[in-house]
Length: 61
Image (cartoon, rainbow, N blue to C red; front, side, top):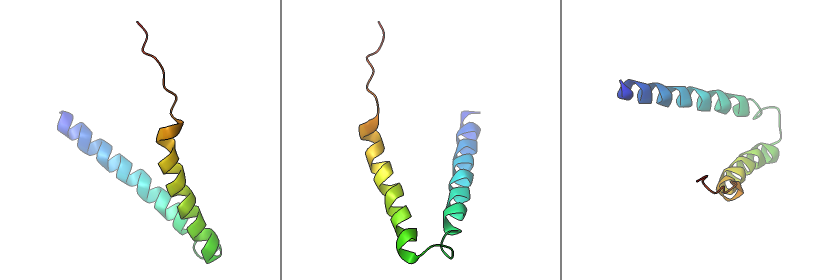
């Protein structure tokens, strides 16, 4: 049963990623080339910074 759940979550994440790729890809013809690729660079920079922005909480006793 856990295998089916993991596979279902995989396909859900795959679906969400493809929706986002389609949304961002829609800007290709509307925006200038520079702005389109700067958006990609901004996504990459944000993903690189997310681990450092996590709030470290102490576990409760």
